[in-house]
Image: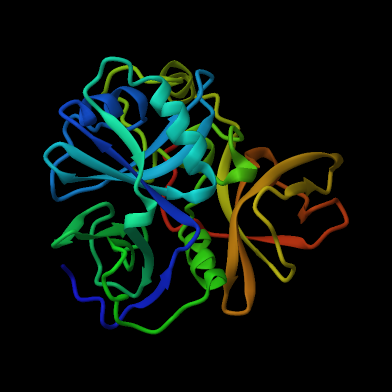
Length: 295
């Protein structure tokens, strides 16, 4: 387990854990989620999405093997109950039992961790530490009774700001079914496998990838005003119709940082505003990763 003594840490009380246990746990999740769980090893986690038949994200999560026949899924708590209920509808005869394991684990966000490839996983008994995109951020999931990781406390707003700054957004209650995975750059961040078999929404997700028709993407902005997930964004040339939506936001260095799903055409000219056409101006920031060009 990488030393976390120099990292800042936050208990993510707004996250929970789903347990998938049984001989078919990996194959069942493989059939339902956007990533490959059939080939999941012990030293990596998987970023994945759970979609509707129309390819819209119901939830985003991180999964890893806790044991040979047990996979844990960490995700924002506000989408957990609905995700657990819907996944359970599809278990049928699979040897897989799904349950809410949130009462057994504590989820922490860490800033300032040693640089590591995204989604690599280190273990310390029943605790895991998962490197997130951005090289020095991590999720740590540990038994509830274990002592908190060493390090200075950070605020929820600072953690959310670091997430937005990294160009990463999780589906929350306000954004359920708002996005096809590519709209929040999910495939760039490692959340979609285009080599695996079918899953709900797979045809729509694949079509968005290969037909070059994607007109909306997640971008990072900053502003002086406070923002909320789900808040609409407007363009100066079209004040009546929203041009995008806030997918994640928080504070960094005294300013609000926003990860927003936005119409790409609105970035060419004019200005973007928070909440309404006369709202606070959004200043674009450079994404910390490259978006592959469309064919």
